[in-house]
Amino acid sequence: MATSHWTAAPAQAAAPAQTAAPAQTASFRRRGVVLERAILDAALEQLGTVGWNGLTMEGVAAGAQTGKAAVYRRWPSKEDLVVDALRFGLPTFEDAPDLGNVREELLELCRRVREAMFSRPGFALRSVLHECDFSAAERFHAVILDGVVEPGVRLVREVILRGIERGEVRPDAANSYVFDAIPAMMMYRSKVCVSEWSDQDLEEMIDQMMVPLLRPAGA
Image 1 (cartoon, rainbow, N blue to C red):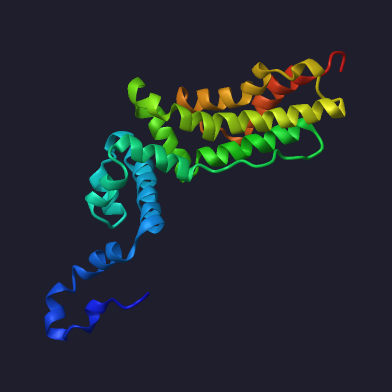
Image 2 (tube, rainbow, N blue to C red; image 1 turned 30 degrees about the horizontal axis):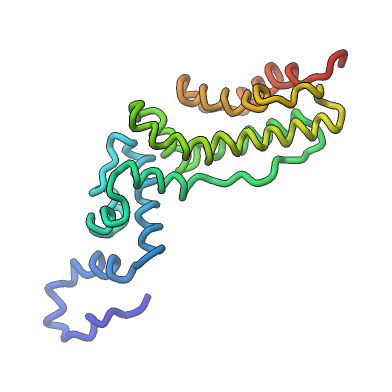
């Protein structure tokens, strides 16, 4: 770490301020993106530990080792901060798994979603879903839709269309109701039933709901 110019002061003058120096120099040295990332990181940590109702701008500032004013300059409200923290933290889903059969691909996809749900950003998102009232939750609708629901639906669609090409899936299964089934079930069970989605739960959902739903007629 670079040495602060304050360390050049005589030892007897610097001594009284030694206990306060780490926090002061930490906030002094961080600027721009580095400081913003620290604040967003602290917001995710607060959401995962004390939840939406317990999160405060003061607590986030303390977690980021900066001043409250630095937080309010960038985010005028708690809602604005949490929206950006979720966008910053939520994982991105790239390509759907290609394992040679639809059942295994859907299972692997569900495991990836479960891993995201139980990551730190996932816990943060769940605290918002579980604790926010309707008016507050409206602020997060686009974040949840763009960051969680639509990527999940896109990957399910990719797996099902690939299954149709291989002859494993009936052609008329390529519709929005089928694509929505897994993301909707996982979100519903997580929010309403507080399900942790064990491996057995995932296998039962795929084997008892998706496989029969997708199977070609006469197979």
